[in-house]
Length: 141
Image (cartoon, rainbow, N blue to C red):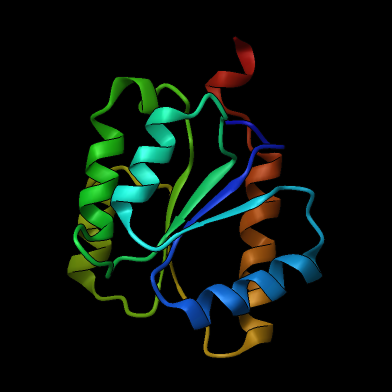
């Protein structure tokens, strides 16, 4: 985990991307925010770059591949798995099955998007602060 690396956001809703952009600017973290509208683009980026991302925030409902399929591909790819990139679901809806399925894929968090901009800001701030404090195996290489 590279705490100064980019935050990868896999989100197909452009309105949500704009809101998240405003919130990240307000939170003022130095991490670059990199958006992908579908999982294929995100996977291509992760597989082709030497950049080590800080974390991945992924919607569940995405075109082509859903968030679970993307997580599975990252989790079973040794190169990506060894980068220790926290993978968190940040989605509109949650139910017992989706949360259970997510944790079966060893996600590091499942968050339902709050209904307000202030709620989104509070949740994103807590997520980032938590992971900034967390120690990962990659820190000992």
